[in-house]
Length: 84
Image (cartoon, rainbow, N blue to C red; front, side, top):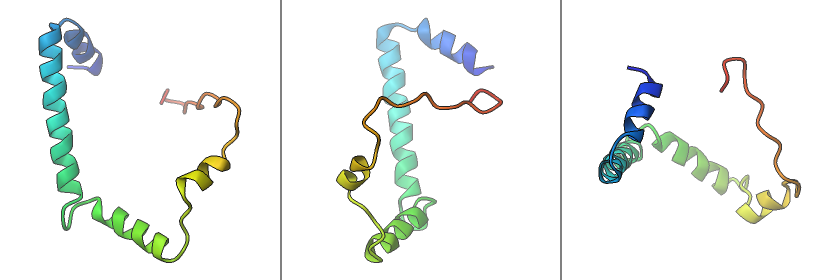
């Protein structure tokens, strides 16, 4: 089964079934996030790294980051050779 086949099948679902699918996917996503950011989870190393950067004074506020962005509309992202 391809991703395209799955997308087409979803398009043919009723609105009620699409909403049920959305809810099911959200539950799976939430469970994955909980696993990743639980003690010894895959995401804990990222949080520890971020905490260390903040503690070392190497972090910027969101406002500081946004101030450094260009004010013009964003250019489209370049695609790599396989289209992503």
